[in-house]
Image (cartoon, rainbow, N blue to C red):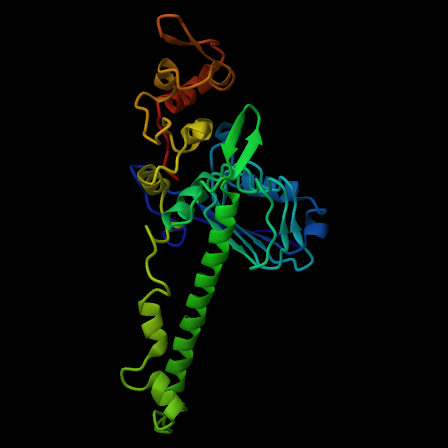
Length: 337
């Protein structure tokens, strides 16, 4: 049996605060314990469950929850191709037994921030294409996104951050694992120096040279290691648990947002950028006016037209009630996650 194990509002962990009057989304855990049985072996069923949490017809493609997917089924060797394509609710993935990630498995999972895989996991190019939050998280600790890896898609040749993200995930998993190890050591040391009952004495004392070295006065090695946060604060530090507004701030500072991905930038972060990674005030309309968007793109994606005098107008008036949301996105407004 598998499926949704919890859906609870939270004020800690992945979030829970209220920012700018917008309540934090509820958190949930989806544990995959029997992919073949419960989900009939279909990753699309898992994705549907993740995306369906707290969703109504009006929500369309906006995130409605912050979901942690845990793949605990040891028989699962591979996360299938397109498994979480465009999954807006996915924030964290823990899959310690998975050996391979499928083609474009997390393509467009814009809110994904946490990844936990085995050290030798095989990841193909394009697996993390347009994972906008991960791109910022990775760049914040010094992993270069623009390393010459390009991905041919549609009408463009796009930057593919998959290699950098994979390297970051393996490094981050090692750091997280060491932190847990040293935390355990601290607990054991405390237990070793705690009386069992009454005045029986310590189970381990500083009379033992080894314990004197590890736990004697001023020799708490585990606490010392943890005090340095195992490597310290690298770059901007660990941003995995920060709000989208903060990620956007760091992303703009580090010039992670790229003009080639403005379609995703505006729908996720509420901004678009020029070729230098600077925000274009006035949104997509201004970008079109300035000639920064090819005609086939602004007509196809935004239904905008441009007259000879530079005036930008709506090509088709077909959005109805949805026009309010559409207009807000076009003018560069986003709800923080």
